Image (tube, rainbow, N blue to C red):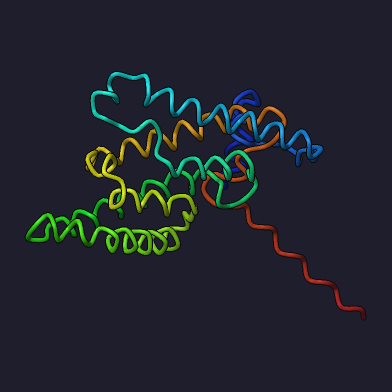
Length: 212
């Protein structure tokens, strides 16, 4: 059973908000697409920032108001919703794996004998983090371009570096909130996601009968 068949078995009030449509949705006029892109991006980024800026739990841990790479994610998740790069698998796992790579690489560099040496080579850690993250996303088929910046941040941003391993749940929560808003707002008149795990493969064409 593929994911579309699974979604089709769910109640319509649920499957609709998970991106399932029995038939392809009608294309919207461009001005409606622009309007919904604006509304969804505004709502999604507001939700993420409200959580981190007003929750004492995160304020006490000095979590930044938003991880900057999520501004770029909003462009994809709310403005290019049919792109494979904008689907939930890429959004969630692309950011998470890139954050993990960025932390691991930067922590390896931090093992240098003295702090000054580490500080002088953080630029190299940043470049290596993004390069490794690109390959990891390719291998896992979770390519999400904004996640390249997520990999950079532990090496280039002191606030993120101070979070240490706590950076991972912050990234995971940010992705989840962006996705939750996308499922709600993008499905009012559009359809999101196109797929959750893998795109539906087209059925192979039947061979033509040879004329006798």
